[in-house]
Image 1 (cartoon, one colour):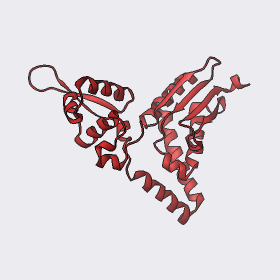
Image 2: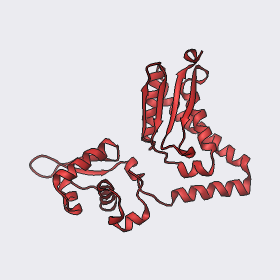
Image 3: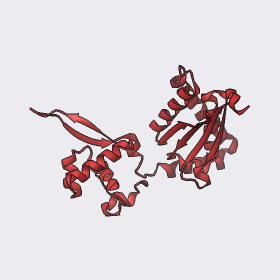
Image 4: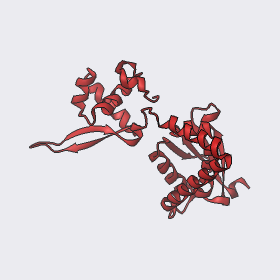
Length: 226
């Protein structure tokens, strides 16, 4: 499902799929029950439930239970942070403008200093979560969980030869990375240090900025490579 643009926000019919329309209703109207959404979208309850299950599985929505009087609590669905990220806004434009302004007024060196600071801050946060992960498999799993929470729609699995495939299906900083590819270099370096430093090898095999639909990384222990 593609992101939802400002045009979509103004015109519900511009949304490409039923899932987009459902996300739009939650964005505009706030938490809703399945019955509310069926009325708003003018579709059957079964169709709404199917969309809710799919969007929840994708991490875009979640429900909250509300107790009202006697009986079972009702479930009201709302966007997750990842779901909020489906909606385009001016942030990407502002970020690109800031990058261009820093580069033009302070120089590339200043921009690199900011990137290093960002990388160091992320490393501290990541290592705090990874600190008691004893195996490379555990570290890859936790890194995938961290990145998914940050909106990268990350998945991973171990290959038959003992290497790991680490995939990010979405890039929430794509506009910034396009304007400054130092973001991509910084994140690759960050992965290297967080997953084991000299004890692991990481190779980017697919790259969104190179035209791929996702970013993918091959990860393996150094002894395996040797």
